[in-house]
Length: 523
Image (cartoon, rainbow, N blue to C red; front, side, top):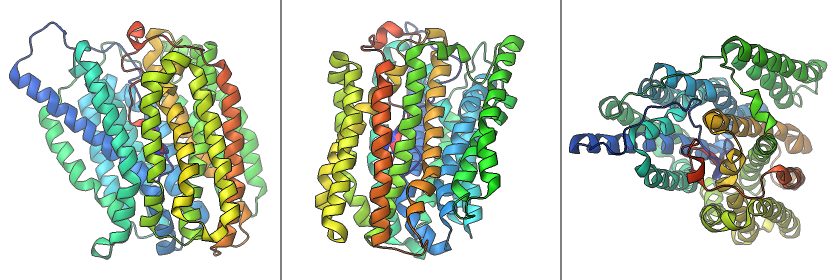
């Protein structure tokens, strides 16, 4: 499964909503010609296919990580960067990608993004060494940050208000399908070893989809821009990214270098970099009112707490999915296909619980549903630890089903309603930028969780060339970290609102609560 956004992926669900919500949309009362109607539905199919490709690419990678490591003889840090690099590049460019679309046109940025994503997929598929693969994944994440924010913006600008509910429902179904199918598709492509390419088809499969999306997108997607788009904040992007890299790079490489002094110095300087970022954002607000992050949002208690939940949830899922894959394939010696099949109960449980939480449970019980999800995930992980200890190296896939179903139910209760709950008390004029920030934070947490596997997982393995029992023992150690994070999430959720208003009463946040490409955990 994948590590970026994380479900088998639920963590890519609450997709980036455009940073600016002053969007020109069709008049709902205006007649729509047959040709225009056909074009907009074709445009919808194109952007949904791009979202599906992006989500599958995230969820498909983890399952092939052991094969990549064996093929390249890659270090543990390289393995972490193959997954974390994508999440970091995606997070760094997400809000800027949305603003670029507002300024220069959503269609234009979508086509640039999908073209770059397709080219990066080709580079990933032909990478001759880990360094090229990591660089290609960084490029792929950056291009996804150009492409993905345009999807909901194009839908919002193409369909009148009375049709968006149906469209967002279809969009959510595509997200769920991508979340469930990604890991299995990755397992099948890896096991089939098409043309002797081993894991490489997991990236090359993007080429026909991407090329078709470029050709049809040029013809059928209509251009749209925001009448009053926010300006770019390049300095803010640089400072935020620098702070993240100064934290993640030492965590990822420190263990292999015996934790050198420069790593601790780098991490110690991170608070000062982020302090500089905040100071610059305040200056940017006074200068032109276009900061990368709208700091006033953090005065909303539920939003600030929700950002903390999103960050820590990303840490938990990023850590779990990478460690879980290595446990099954390197620790237990299972094939990629068996590992992928083992995850099916988890995927189905996430999908079922997600639908029920949004439609029936959250409207009645509010934040208690999300808190129950956090406790269920913690309980599922502890059950997994117990089973792993009890059955040892002889544990079977069917024995993993119970903890995975409990975990899946917990994750589904959280991921589907989380974004809407966090946005519920945000002023409607800031709904777009707030949604983008939520998704950016989730990707940052994912990258941080992947980096922390150096300590929580690889740090428990004395010999990087080992396999079998040491990986199983390290898996149990890392899972206690996940349990601790889920309990922190449960506590932080007390700052979320007890109940949320129905979406229709918050029309200033179009698409709130709809599943979108970046909120499903990468599995």
